[in-house]
Image (cartoon, rainbow, N blue to C red; front, top):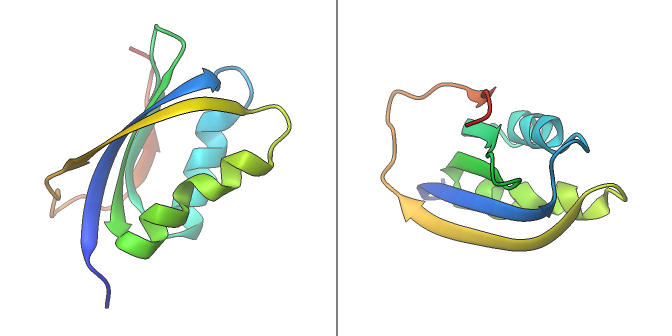
Length: 94
């Protein structure tokens, strides 16, 4: 079994109004990840994702295959695990 990790991402580019949050949700479901995704008022998207290292590393592969989504930059920070987290949510903007 691989190591469990949690990462915080800020994704810049054409990522709002193109279905990015829902693609992130479906990718998280497919990879059995927990966390959340939400739009930021800056136009960026914030994501916290937790799960096995291999699954977290594959999480963004889905976005690069979509012609409407354009990721210009991703900032990533490792975070402490949230032990009792059980789902991945699409949250309201902030």
